[in-house]
Image (cartoon, rainbow, N blue to C red):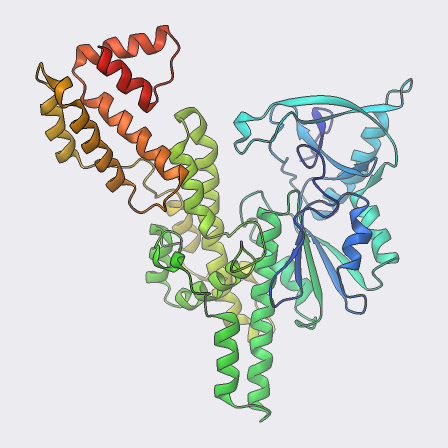
Length: 481
């Protein structure tokens, strides 16, 4: 299947333009593993300065979609009907590289001969949820037109003397196709784990970059552990010495209050099922969690996304959003759970196959594990999508609302409803999101227990006056009813 660029708009890779020349650049603590968003053209030599000039560099491009540079800014095609999602490119890596060349040609063809400009889209403002974004189009001079691959080739010929480039065509927010793990392993397996520098890049430097960094760190951790064990076998060091280093460096999580929260520790139903049915994944989860933290947000890491904790934190965004905005968050959450599941499986595989030099590839290993693919497909959406309140306590308050003097007890009723909401969200950390959700649930439950005639009157007034059904408004209307 060939992707047609004719029905695509050209959009800035960063919604408002590059925030800086090396957006979200960081290094995973303890590893020569780096992450970055799509740099500006001026950012490449700056990035080269951040790397060791004497050691080999492998640049992993974690994007499927083609990227070109116009006036030093990276741009990419987006489907005109779906402008906020990266397009998925089926086929081989060579096809993706050819499409990048075609993108440069398309930009040339779209150049306005009179003004020498090309239309490029960007977001009017930044917004967390894609459904809240608005696009605007601008005319940019078609100057210094280059492909991403050509810039990387120039980098390898100039500032970085020993550099190879590997495209890893990963799907957005996922750990698929499974072959991406083997692509990364193949590039790293014969390299010195302590010296070979791995740079992972994607659009924002967030999900796909972090995924690559975690995979890279898992591979290096297993390689380094194997070297330590070989040193013991040859009599260079003691077993206790090696195991102490391995445990401290690759297995011990940084002390944190988050360790006490089962959801922040990734204890979702399908993950618990995996650990129960495949006991080896318990050790795999330890390695995966450690590398996820190393590549994640401070204080454990220096990154911008913790691939385990982001699952429940995105769930909080889902809970807070209106029903018309929840679809995007739900899709992300399901993808994040699937991604985490695969990382645990990969870490388990790496611990098993790493000492032999990864003689068996990950895709084959997954195929030998009966039911794993079916397990994640069936279990990735098994989550409590709506909070269940204590109906016994709600029914007690419903009976108080049935009397003619319910307004006299309204203060007590609302207070008790708020306590019910607090209990419902007791697992969440304190903060604005928790307070918003509690007020939202209190309002929703209050409306459910109102006498039918009062509820009808309030709903009519909300509709006619185009009022928001927030806590203060609803309580005010109940008092005035």
